[in-house]
Length: 57
Image 1 (cartoon, rainbow, N blue to C red):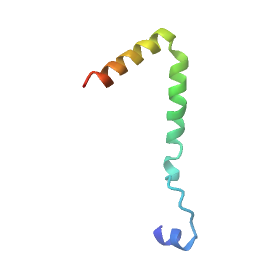
Image 2 (image 1 turned 60 degrees about the horizontal axis):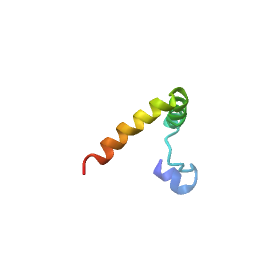
Image 3 (image 1 turned 180 degrees about the horizontal axis):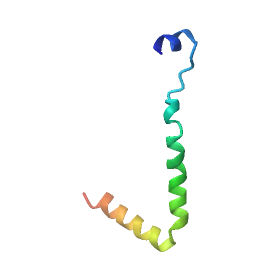
């Protein structure tokens, strides 16, 4: 494969074609979860995250 990339026979995209579809699900999942939560639920999740993030100091 390295030889094919070096000679220009194959283009190096940096993403394995068999795994290219994996990132699409992650991008959709966050937006879908945010849309499903109420503002109160999102606020509670954010408060827990901030406590974890800043409570270690």
